[in-house]
Structures are given as C-alpha cells and as structure tokens.
Image: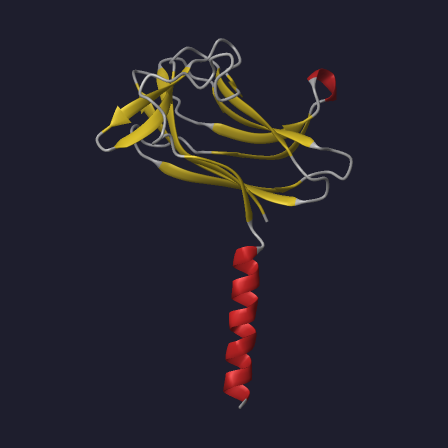
Length: 172
C-alpha cells in the first residue's frame, strides 16, 4: 500500500511539473527558407546591432542561422514576459573560426533601454574549438516591475562566424 501511494505521488508530481512549462518561443529554422535574414526589417523581429546580419543556411539535413563575421556581432530578440515569473532560455551555438583567435560567445538577458538597461542574467562560452556545437542555457527571474526582456547573443572577435540552432524560451 505504501509503495502504491508513493508511486502515485511521484506520477502526480512529474505530470504537473511537465505541464507547468509553457513554451514562449521555439525556433529551429527548419520551416524557414534558406537565405531568410533574421534581422531584416519586418521579418522575425530579431535585431542585429552593429549591422550584424544573420542568415538561414542549409547544413546537411539541418537548417541553422549564421552571422556575418565583422567585429562585434549581436543578435537580439525582445519578448513580453510576466513580472516575477521564471524563464529558461536555451540556444545551441557554434563558432567557425576564420583566422580569429577568440571564439567566445556571450549571452545576456536584459531589460530597459539605453542608460537604464540592466542585466538580469548572463553567461558565456569558453574559448571553444572551432566548428563545435554547444548547448547554452540561462535560467532567470523577471523583476516584479518589468514586462519585457531582451535576449542578447554577442561575439566580439572579427573573422569568426556564429551559428545558432534550437532557439527556445520557456516559462517555468
């Protein structure tokens, strides 16, 4: 009887924890046409600060988005969020080095604009091997007085392209 009760509690716990996650945004690029620009005005509403360009490419049987290779590449997307709620941002990244020695990619979650911008969370890859995919995850809690956040990907070094795949934001 105790085993049955314990199993029932575990099943209830796991089924409610799985249901409680809400996918806010999920993009793996498979439905997009090759050549689609993520940062093009009126497109997917990504911003490419510093004239960064991000284009969907076909690689074997997988579509990915790849950046231009100028110095200071950014990819930014803003989301409406619930104040005080917890979220998880996941994205796979790869850096292909074309003579650049730095391949670090930084990720940050921010709110506000200009001088009033604040970081909620940040993370970065270490100097990774060229052409190696890494999964990146940032969990964060939205401040009580905020309803919008920006998810920012940044790579500094010139001559290195960043590719992304499986871009997902989940409300926990």
